[in-house]
Image 1 (cartoon, rainbow, N blue to C red):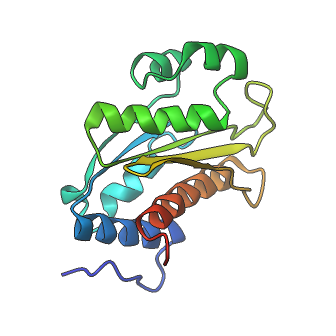
Image 2 (cartoon, rainbow, N blue to C red):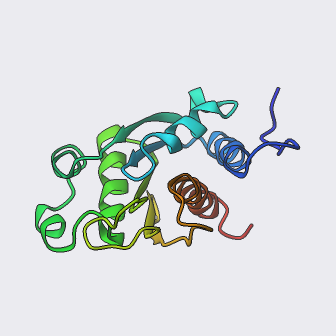
Image 3 (cartoon, rainbow, N blue to C red):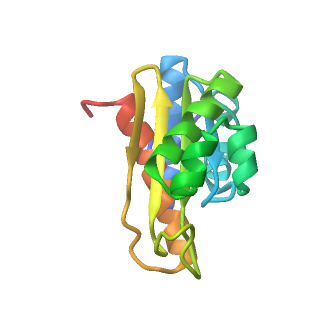
Length: 171
């Protein structure tokens, strides 16, 4: 039986997913994901964590702007004015998936993984958000390199950390 404790050799994202899954389960909470930049990687790492079946409701990969607007209810004027790589877009994606799935928490990622800038934002620009009972928070992590895989991995880790910190604000 898993306690959510880290195991040697697991990537950071797997350790973080175990931690948030254990914390969600202990509190009787659920989570859903809305991803653009990470293309389902966040959902996959959450689904792989022991106990995920009790807390992870599902996710939306919203690569297209229309999917963000239509399915996640991201404001069309915001998308037209700022593009998809913006902290408020991440916030609205998190809020949208939370509302659509009735999850306790919504977790979102958006950004520019390259090889070229996206919506005028340079490669490596990342925004993540968590929406929950205490409101919505965003973060802008700094990926370690401009390699697309590193950018996506940094986004997944940052989103999971943001949720972990929301679940354990004093820990």
